[in-house]
Image (cartoon, rainbow, N blue to C red; front, side, top):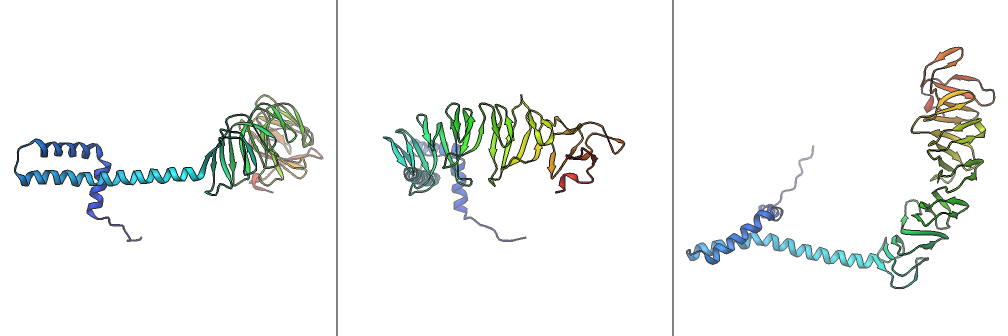
Length: 304
């Protein structure tokens, strides 16, 4: 255990408590000032009273000066990192309207971080409103879609949307049914592109399921499907754990995986497997070609 410590001088600690306890020290300074001015006392006592008031005032004066300096620095920093456009202008490649309030990521103002838009604005072919935020880690714009519109081939609904500098959708909620990756997605489905660019997450609305031809099954409303860019379903999950029937087997849709030609998931309700009735939550494996059902084995959810 380290014995290294920080020892502050007494005057610093005393000054700190004077500032923190201003609601006591300020009235004390006022009282001392009044006593020194109006109470009849010896000259030495008067000097002592005024000296004590001055000592108590010093930390507060220093704090006030530091606060003023800090505020000045902050305002200067804001001036360097923020602009409000007084006319329509193209900033770092974006055509922005007058009145746009822009925050930058650097003093050279080469990268926009955040924009407060005064009107509906076309950004990379996407009509957005309200605020526009750049996510540097993902290189995406986050904003609010101004009304239902087609974006990157998707019929996106008004509301939250993310897109890249080419106007390609990374997340939006569908305003209408849409054929995508071999599925007919219902309105209200939220489509999200994976960070690796090779996967999509398809979150179904709470009022509509989705037919999955490869499984000859229907995913329940509210389920999220994890699909590759070529339309192969890898897994499904559902917070409500609704039943998903695959090849006649009632499965719990909360943890369902597709591994090659097999579906692996826990039973939603008791079901006969290998001639024996198995309880709910038993992990089973279904051969999609033959329809054969077998026990999935120990730690089935960890198996590749």
